[in-house]
Image (cartoon, rainbow, N blue to C red; front, side, top):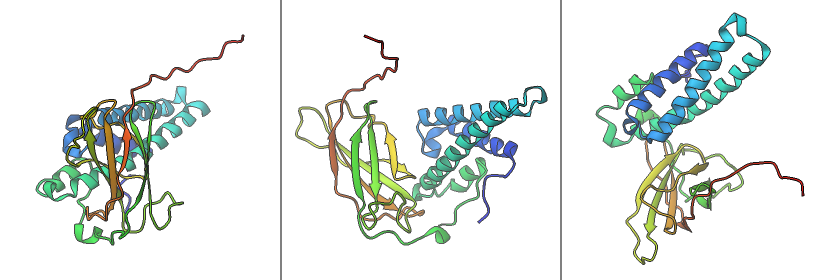
Length: 239
């Protein structure tokens, strides 16, 4: 299958510029949050600036070229991850009407659902949940048949994350809500915006195919949200 990213570095940056522009202009249209859109735009600007410096004869050195290579590699990696999640978001039935238009706007061809349909895993995944110092969660999802592997099982392309909340001091759980879609099996994510420190969050995940055909849900894992800690890094002073 042809790669949607051009081989030339300048054209790769131009592709990322188009994607960043549309994500920043209407993030909800592509299934991202405004902070995610801003983070991708910042990454694009850093790579574009490093590329411009490396292409200026008077400033082209081994240091600027290496900086450009590192910035571009980070941009390409995040571009592929973001495109994967955008495609997963747009291929759902509720976006069928304007899916082709949205994909074309960011330089992608429409996905053919009949060709993308693959066998979905029949076994529920294993979910591991840990709190982060920033008050969020770290999700690790593993294939039940091969828990030692980081790759998704055959037929799966994304992970659907569902949550429900039990507010502090309440014995009532909220209804299950789809929280987000992950294109990787390990990710640090922010806590649901409708949850507060002290609330109990229950999370369950399932694998899904490129056409959003979902496999069985994992066993729920619960955790109490802690406060957000600000991390300070400094040198230890001698006694």
